[in-house]
Length: 121
Image (cartoon, rainbow, N blue to C red; front, top):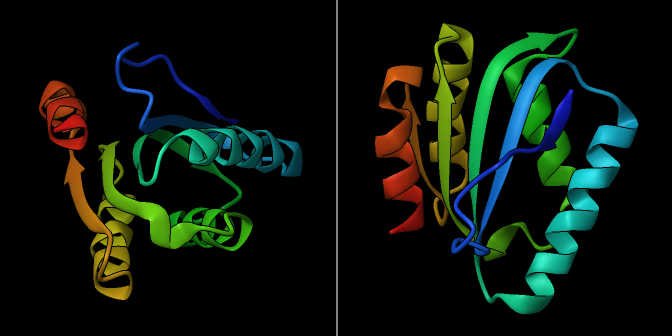
């Protein structure tokens, strides 16, 4: 499942995502629709992603699918990934190097509040 997650109501420039288990094509479609609507209202957006588990898809595939689905990837300036899954933590460091305009940081679940503060600042 990939869905828009609850987040601070005053942070419309942040797209909060939650990943838990297998992700379907409709999940990506729903997220892209939300992102496109927010891009109409904001020059840049930020992603906050909580990854609890991945089912049938690697972290790099998830990010690659999102990148391919989002037409305006260059309008994102921060990515905060909250996870305790080591493979995801490693993939995030690779993304940081592949997308130089996108500042990426990885946090563990016990650092969730720090991640929220960083991505909204």
